[in-house]
Length: 309
Picture 1 (cartoon, rainbow, N blue to C red):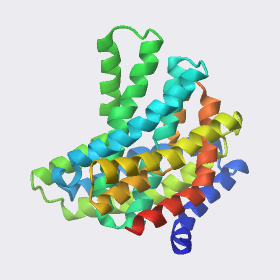
Picture 2: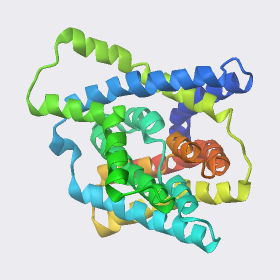
Picture 3: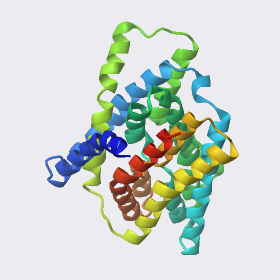
């Protein structure tokens, strides 16, 4: 456990550095926004393209793996929704809280950290988790919020969802990389060096951006944020572990990667959605702040556990 903690600590130290830069206003919110945009559209996309260009679709698409992750995630999604409805929240608020309970920071934190700690064989499983989060649950929250607010005809809602997926650089870069791989197209040397160089900026840039963005987050509504953080950091990986190991009998290594990915703190894009629709942004902000702080310990515990099998 101590060895794993020491290996994860540098990642959280970079996050802490970004947090200090943001709190001191050395890095303004505007600077953080532009750094996040650089990482999201350029550095992380280059990293994902390079990874996927060296994989086949068969290396990523494993239906038992997908179903196991979906089963465990849906279980916690439903639990968080039921608790929200019991508190008499609206459908839109319940959808936002459920999103906090199951969507982790796989893109900015999970891919660089888990690939380094668990090995390059983790690339395929982590990308599969990312794809499910973006395609299934990223679409579901938009459908629920738009539908509950009377967002118009179903085709308009689906068009919004489809457009959002097509504009997501993470989805686009993965698909492009898989197309290159499927067609056996060799990546020219200069292009390969270009994406390696650009992708190398993804890890420190993403971690620093996470920290700097946390500096603007508030810890209001701590009780609710604590519950959502508990769902994300504890219940979600446990549910995914039960589905992967007991129901679908997934092989130990991909199951371990899936469980580790499920243990990551609440993703920043949940706040972006909450802010965009004007639904409980401060609640989401607090959940991101608390879950990220607690994950320094909980993620290390989970990774230590999964590496044992």
